[in-house]
Image (cartoon, rainbow, N blue to C red; front, side, top):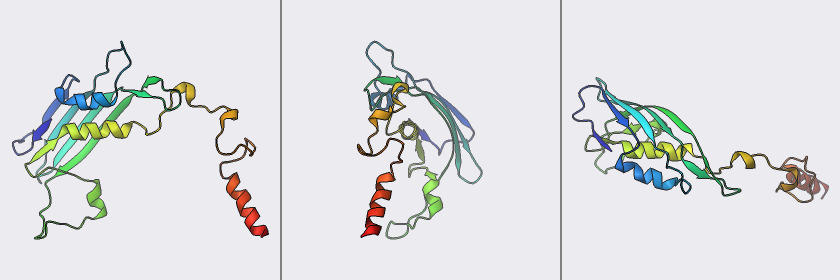
Length: 175
């Protein structure tokens, strides 16, 4: 969903119901189990222009996608509730070479594109993907039984994962 900021004179609220066609890309990343209705993303996005050409974007996003447990392959819901408070600014003028030097503070900013638009689809998709952990485990698999520790077959199960490094360090000191 593209929002044209050039025509934005006063605050605008956009309600996302979950039925929008552009959400299909997000839904395809997190399919629901068979015979279970797919959860719908809901969001309320408020865009507010400021006196200095910035656009304040406030959003409340709620979604409960089904994700797969990395250990047992069962699907389970992962509740996502995000509140965003972002400031979009006009792109900086480029020098003759078409390049600019970035400062650390530039990396935390969002920019309105060259056409004066903000792509809400990209923004919401990014937030959903970032909210899902890279390694997922369901509640049944979160605790690891003592017999299934991976770091060393020889080590005592009470050892830390760094015990092998301590042993190696001791051996090197002896030589």
